[in-house]
Amino acid sequence: MRDAVGEVTARLVAGRPCRAMVEGVDLQIGAEPLVAMVGNVRWDGVETAKSTTLTRNGVPAAEIVVEAGKLQINDDKGIPVIRARLEGETAPVLDAANTTVRTAKRSGTNVTIGDMTVTGTQDLLLAALLTAHELGPEVRALAACHRLLLLQKSAP
Image 1 (cartoon, one colour):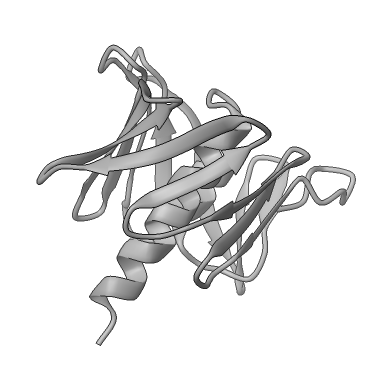
Image 2 (cartoon, rainbow, N blue to C red):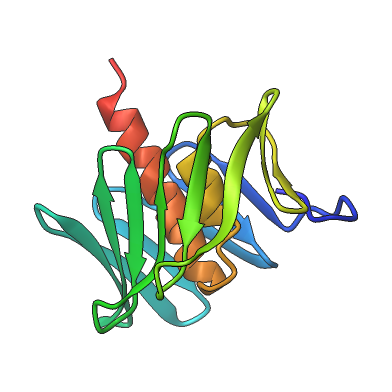
């Protein structure tokens, strides 16, 4: 992901482990279960049938809720922080008040969101996650790798 002046502010490399760098925080994220270490802080993803709860040292920090064409990240109390939904070639990103704060749009082989460009993908929901400054960099990195892992599982 590049900001308005072309600086790389996020990078994601699919694989096992998934590698994510968001705003200077570099993570190697294991899959099944989702797990990463940042210094002495352990991040885990605890999956249920409806969502994945991200825990920080065993304490809930965020929840990822995925439905067909929709993505929502809740805070540690279950209150939505961001929501995104596919609408054709765009994906509006809504805040906690359900107000559209930005829109992801396909642009050639990339996705643009305001003055940010996410290269190497046309996945609007992935781009919405990577650009969600309402979330901490660790949560954005974990949620982005979680999305990639879900897409890999559903691929034929």
